[in-house]
Image (cartoon, rainbow, N blue to C red; front, side, top):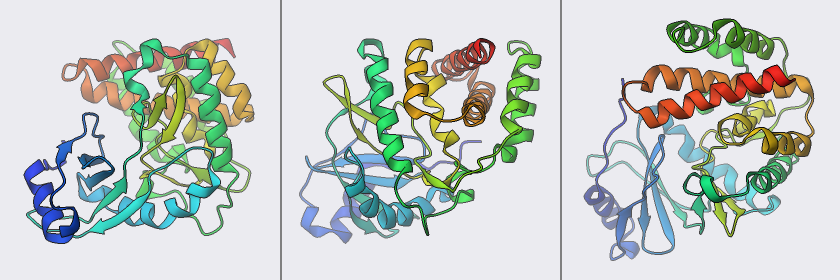
Length: 297
């Protein structure tokens, strides 16, 4: 069941006017690709308002305000700059944020005419830089970020149940072989920073290159494999190989990344087929890429 709340432009205007009167005269308009965890509105030309769409996303607000200013100067590309935290009000029940606006278009709008190998190199460079930042005292993977960077075993039952219910279109033997392989290892190194949602909607591009990375709500510290999902749900075989070489991770980590991609695709396909066929087909494509990559290993 989708329990995310609807947030109107009028509510956002009222929140701004009552809590940040210095910005009350600025135009408020919804962002087209608003995201799942938050509702986003552009504020004037230079700011963005982000409001959690459900209670389970509220912890992201404080986390981003605490950690993004520390990460930003150590990364090769811009990331969101927190400007203010708002309080509940105007019938909106959660804390919310104001950020600086970042130029660029979501990769999701450019997939048909962007060089994926170039994007693969750019994303890998960003992730390698992120992983190289001292993670001491960083937020360990857990419920706050839906276990990104944590153990895939948390989703074992969910993945197996979804695969079983999709038996009419998902090869059970191959899917479970891939899944079991992903569960058979764990990260043996020190925990590293993970973004947690390296998706085409969170990667901004300009002139064919990655220009910024947004939405660190699922960030945390742990196993880097959860940040590899892009390899299967966006990249093709050629650019995936470029990405893998640039990331320079061991086979077991790559296999866990494949597991993360499979889990996400399975639960999304089960939830969306017959409802949102665009998302369902995205999931089918991801599953095909996961299986093809596994068979070519």
